[in-house]
Image 1 (spheres, one colour):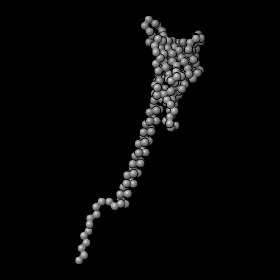
Image 2 (cartoon, one colour):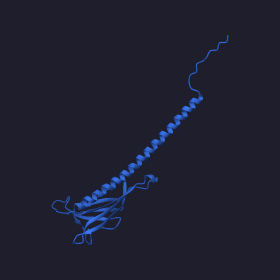
Image 3 (cartoon, helix red, strand yellow):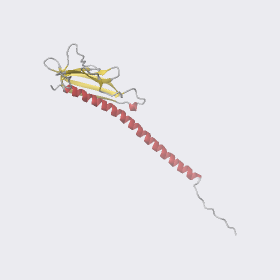
Image 4 (cartoon, helix red, strand yellow):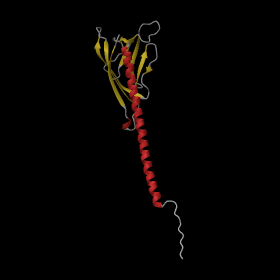
Length: 186
């Protein structure tokens, strides 16, 4: 009588282990590619958001100042510069006047040293309107309409903003140009 004891097999064969490891490797590659793409998309969206928010805020601020101004401060020695990509706008305004004054002057300009848009109120330090994360490459002001004294009353403003520095990949390049008109309402 030949009795053979059957051993119960437990565990996996080599082929099964290799199969499971290859499935796991494929799943890991897919997951890593998905997460990498997600991180890239988030970084790209963040860059575009910063550029857009800065351009939008700068344009809204310029419009607010123009619409609340008494007039464009225009004379032969005034600093207003029209039809130039590094525009400079000087306004006479009754908003936030110094004590005892009925009007004051503000300047809106592109500082070529740091490529930021600034507002300078009479008697105060200049304040940046845009963050240091972006560069303003164009602040173009065009006079569209004039009053009886040949002083501009309606202006076209064009602002171009891009992310600071040169991106390492072209997909991270972000730039936006906004164009609008504003009129002095006083």
